[in-house]
Length: 144
Image (cartoon, rainbow, N blue to C red; front, top):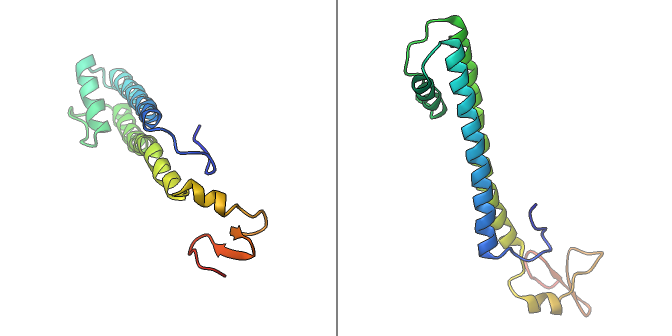
């Protein structure tokens, strides 16, 4: 799904497509969760579609229910749905920021100059770069 550390950085246009894809997945999860909330409020408290949507959206947004809940089943549903919504918000924020964090981390591990990798090829037994008989540390670039 994501490029590996040894692969090149994804072009900006493909990165934006990846960001749109992850955003659409997060929006889909939110819409599905709102649908569950609307159905739950319609079944437990017998609210109209608009009132059920309002209560579900307010709980998902962290504001709490608008209508006073009278039945115990509706109160139980509202409590469980509020916990579920808190979890879903965290999941969706994580989904949205995953490509951004991956790009930042991937960019930080890339070599700045391709010529550097040609001059200092990776040695299979050491962490660092080998040029003739001099070992250069990968992190500090100090000759050891």
